[in-house]
Length: 355
Image (tube, rainbow, N blue to C red; front, top):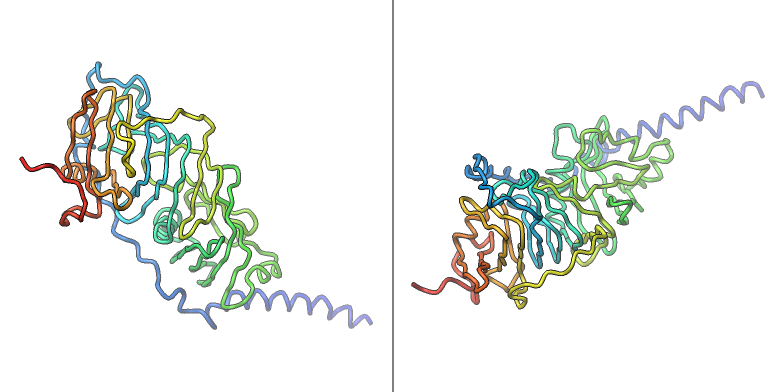
């Protein structure tokens, strides 16, 4: 009996050590190749135009005394050349960070977008870019080569987890809103075909203890859940918003925002337009131009698909389009889609009348 009591703790310790050793050796023995198509980051976005980086004094009479009311509908809003927020609808305000300053379209670091309510989606390509470039786009990140795609009502995410060695994984997770954050709750983790959740539990580990997220942007872990701050993970312009719900709808992760302010609806000068951005009030700066008491409806020249808009290249889109002065001194602006620049006009695309 004494001899049996001696061997029992030794056997338990040996079993635990074996499980830990197996966890570390899994990628070496069966999954060293990792994902089939590693994520390749696109080139970094071009710097803003020089005009946006040079000081341009604002005349006293052009100082903004109120925010610029904003509406967007069916807009593919680029945060870089390849990462897109699919703004199905949005009502909010834009305000300069400097009191009295204009909303400067040439420098997105100088203003804030305050979202009152919005429905915004991201497809698999956009989610891949967001996670790899902005959330975990730094040296020594614990997760890399991530691929995210809707899978029924869940998100399926695959990639490489680095913990001493590289561990390829695939995770299926439920998504929900949690105090303004996106909660990703794994229901299944596969590590080389082995139940990852069970394995982590067996060795007393979790995603929270396995992942060093101290350098990550807008992400934290609670046990095995990952939480994303939907505004902090984005590059400029700065966004203020409150996430109220998140769902998988078709091929998109759709986020619903509601700040509870209930700003009144804006009446469009041309409500028949499907793909549109509207700015009213405050002062806008576009290059050398100042629009005081803004009243500008920006319309997609090609209404057959969402308005493809890239703030960093708005002037190129503007130069490729045309505008019409309105009887109330407002402005209707027709812009070409960003991805159509330099291409022939599409069938049905509107263009300036010949001189």
